[in-house]
Image 1: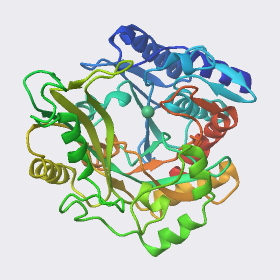
Image 2: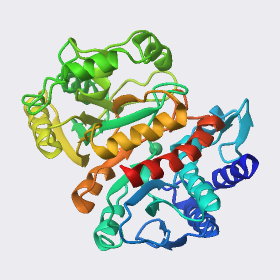
Image 3: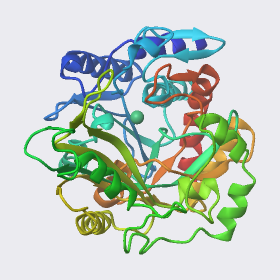
Image 4: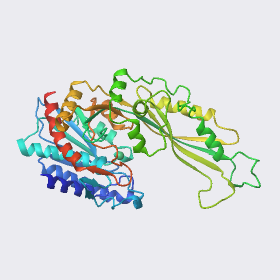
Length: 444
Ligand SMILES: [Zn+2]
């Protein structure tokens, strides 16, 4: 089965299913068709559902009353592979070396979702049936914000009704350490632009006469934090739940320590909100980040210019119980109030997503932890993650169920970056994990 499973993975990875690139739309659709055919070949009833964007693939076994219904969610779309020159092998020609497959989408999310698919195939082959009513929902727009998934959930609320959702799109704290993620940060995004003179100016003729928008943007952005790394927006921390002592103790025992994080980041030193550990800062504390800056001359050499405008892209990672829309309003008020003289500020709002937290000790959480333990043979690490999966909140609000996050990504798998990779041992573990999970959920 190993060779056939690997061949399936390689075939899946060869589709350049880059959802954000219109030139790839045909390949995205072909990838959905391939996946649908693969699900049908296992004996499931499968369909590709068109959406106003890329299709969603839905599959199910024959449902029987009296059994638990489990929905497994994942995505077959991938991030763009750029910059191409940093890949050691072409991103859509998967390459296996030392038991690690390198390709765009290897970890995020094709390797992980295909492990679930093949796990179901194994169970069907072994016993002719699954212990639960199963629904696969595999979308093609996760990497571009899942814009059409919520309407899809609303339109198909009855047929997608389930008791629990399982997702493998998060990480493991280290090799062979089973990891159960029970919290995610939320997100709020903004773009800001400061405008000064009506045109770029000669910095000799006019330098000293007007405010420089690039300088003023830097000054404005610097007001977002205190020197100690706290976010300086008034009311930003309203509603933030403190980290419990139990969590602090648990996280303190993880092998994911500062030395390792320093190594993984390649930064000269770690930095963040004073008074919190690094894991608290990335998993349970909110942040403000500048994701991009634009303004003035970017070419070779010198150009003596005062740019007419400068802009920045900002995101805020949010934690329970912050309210994303309220936080964004506070940030807007802060930016408006702190706009330096001589420039005009323009703010455009981006998307928001709420933070997520579930109880790792719930019966379903315990079932997931047992499945992880059976698969990897060790006590699962219980963690939160700093990233955001906004659709998890839509599952809660629209379908009314919790999501179990059983990730298989390693800290150095380079998700969204060149040379994304996935160890085959994690892929095979995922196939076993799926079977253990469905068995445990059937009983739990
Ligand atoms: Zn991703």
